[in-house]
Length: 128
Image (cartoon, rainbow, N blue to C red; front, top):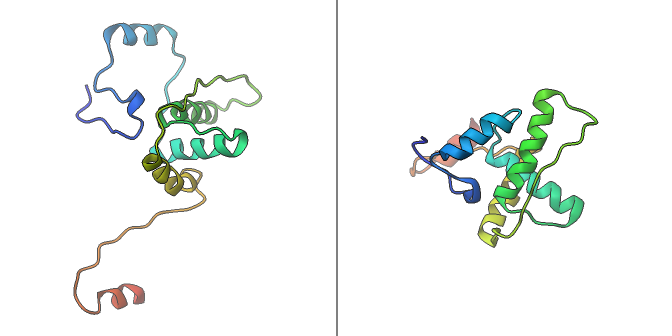
């Protein structure tokens, strides 16, 4: 049971796996990999650039997972299938995807800081 569930890939976000689903996975699944939200965004961008199709985050999770699986297990030249979908995408999520896609491919980074709201703080930050 998870303490919390993220809402980005809400189509696959579950707090607890059902008993039957868990039983089937134990029997049929070869391996499990974890992927980040940034990797999901990168997969959405890749699919759009290659096929002009926009995946929803849960559908792109399969593609990001297949890529991570191949990388982790060193698979090259193998047939790998990822079942994708796209019906649950909206413009608000698409904005997030465009901001994080290059982060997922390690082509960009996002840096964040908090500046105190006092005169000279931005200048001091720039001097660092």
